[in-house]
Image 1 (spheres, rainbow, N blue to C red):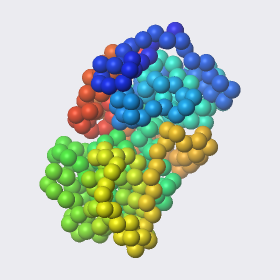
Image 2 (cartoon, helix red, strand yellow):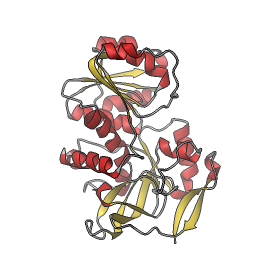
Image 3 (cartoon, rainbow, N blue to C red):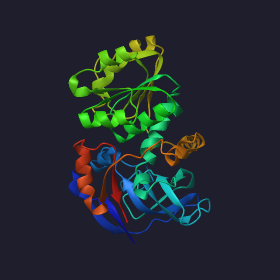
Image 4 (spheres, rainbow, N blue to C red):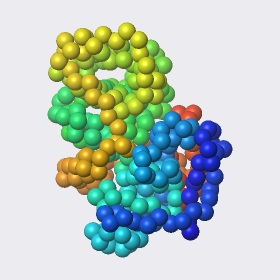
Length: 323
């Protein structure tokens, strides 16, 4: 048996309880990971509220990433290997199974805590910016929610490939965090529309958008010719009235909606293989990339972690220590 955080219904943080459940058995192409730590993602909050169910056939335990050690399963990974798991669920538990090709080695300089907050945000950022967005050197990228986990990863990846970064955030502390990672221009959205500032910046060749509805009009207005607009979240909602798609069409821009959790193993494996082949993990070895951890909590404090994220207080990742 193992400890796991179970949602006993849907709703507020009070529905999450630590329970004893059976240790999962890995399938033919899976490994079993003994989890040392996991990290919170906004998808966890949505699932807890009943708004983002797991894909059919996968566990309903929360948690889309983890760090730990191989405890069994496919021979691709020797027992005891320090790894990160890119999950469809199950991270809030002492053990989890995952496809053998959705496991990554932990860079030697990273602790289990640092590694726990790496997979979901950096793979999402890499997918949006390079795999789908085809970002190129000196292009101008607009990163919304720059101090979120994915936002901080996007800033680092963009500067690594010499893109110019304009980002939005909502506090002076978050502005500093974005600037410290190399953002070229940071706009506090509480000051008003970012549109005049980004037009002075030269517009956007790429938009990395987790905000959605409230920014649609200004996003359309700042797109450059042949630009790419990647929407991977809807923090402000998904419904917008009176969108004029002709304005996007006239700029020969591409609008792409993307998620990761429900994608095929083939898609997920391909992104991971390109992420590794591109040398991103080596950048954690040499210190150029950083896993930004806001707070580490014990698994028994999972409710507190969700409340912090709901208040939008965190800069970077909230990690749950499992063992």
